[in-house]
Length: 455
Image (cartoon, rainbow, N blue to C red):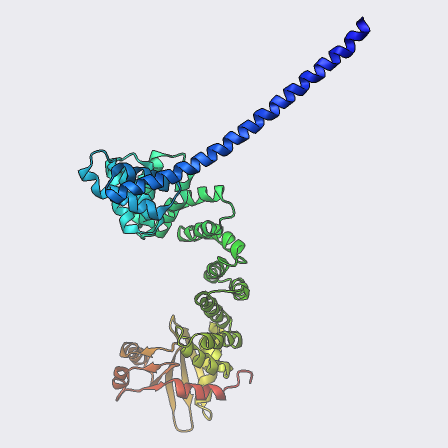
């Protein structure tokens, strides 16, 4: 009897398990059908809302219930065009309909306008909403962003700070607030917010670059330089980073590193012409400062080919083409004080090729070098003072009056003013009847060509 019960129990248990499984499958299928039915119902509800609301609005364009339902629908879907139209209507008719929430209508109209770049509409609506509800985070936040887009940075700062006070947990306020301070050139105030953005977005190159610029402007150039050098290869921020790094190295008189910065910039792909011209121009001037005139000229001529009339490039090309052909002229304008003084001595000897010249004294001034000498011939001996100016500009009569007083005080027989530039008309009038001669650019260049610095 016992042996017959075991198979019977097994059969009962198996049948029970099978029934349970079938019931579970049926439940799951039922739920899936309910979900599908719910989705259809949701879609149907949306279409019904639109159809019924539009039907009401066809008879009454200011039907508040229909406008409100459509507004809720489109605003939730972020359909900004339709949201803007509906909430503008609600805002405009609110004075005649007490059942309209005017602050919400203004807020949503402003947010939609912001997303559509209708900034004037956004500012008017959001200002109204914030006045009505001073603790509205959305009104303060979007109004601040609208002012930022409209380049009114003092007001964007005020609104965004208000939004941050209302909801300090919302990290999305850091970026527009940081950039508002930055654009308002309040660099020190921008740094805390921009750094918070970078903590959240370590790969944000725009924020990184802006932090470096702000650091440069607030006396933290060393820290800024590290960021600029890190960004040099970046296709978007690399060109400007190369310029900033180069400027820093130029200021520190580290011209080799400045050239490295600019050369990295020139190798970047798809650089905007404005930035490429700036990099080439700065690099050319650094090469010239190193007395590598041929490389500087090469870059200046490339700039001429790219952009006619860029800055003073045409004048620089003329000037340095001439310099490149005359090493003594390079020495006169660009060399250190020792080489320049040596050239001045040689110049006086070349000026008096067949006379006995003895240098008595040399005085190095900020703007010039003076050489006092005696010039002897078979007939006479003169005491003469040469003043050498290294400028290319026009020298006026004030400089010459000072020189005249000097030669009179030390009882010189004659004085000579030498310049790569020219002397003004008033200066020429002043020396009439006085023992002063001018040696201007053309005569100076001719004499420099005759000088052998190695003889």
